[in-house]
Image (cartoon, rainbow, N blue to C red):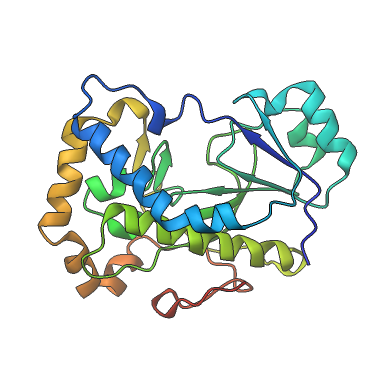
Length: 255
């Protein structure tokens, strides 16, 4: 049983998906429009039919560190603070919940860090570097101690949006299990290869990058990956917590 005391939802401003583009029909705009429509198709029924009992409060983006919100969160005395898609967390929250503030980074750290870290591996032709990283939060950006990592379940003829949506569903199930089993978690012992392959920046999101993304898909990137998946995955090992481990090739929702 997970008892959510309250959620703070930062408004969607200054996000990559809301970044203005020069032309309405640019490749960047069309890719983001397709992604947003795919998310509506995939998640809308659940969102509209589920009663949110988490007492959500919408605040301005970046305001989660303002003293009034920080004091309110501290006063709630939660066992864990769960973070997803928030601004960079700062003091006094970091000190108040050291070892109890958990973040999910949609990307595989340390291989890809920064912004849109599941977009750029596909631009680089590396589906094996797509995934989600569960970590403790520290003062850096995507640098906290890694608790667990997952890759999405890939299928032949996948699209970028299908991969992303499926990963979000898997991420939610895994985060649920992480919270339930938090007291039983063990330290991951993975030695990460290649360290940081790429630090991703918003300014790298160009029409050329989007064109390369779809060129890779059109020329069999996913199919080629799936034919040699085990070997390719071994080049980028994951931090696996044995308490949460599952066979990604036979993925079954955990909760």
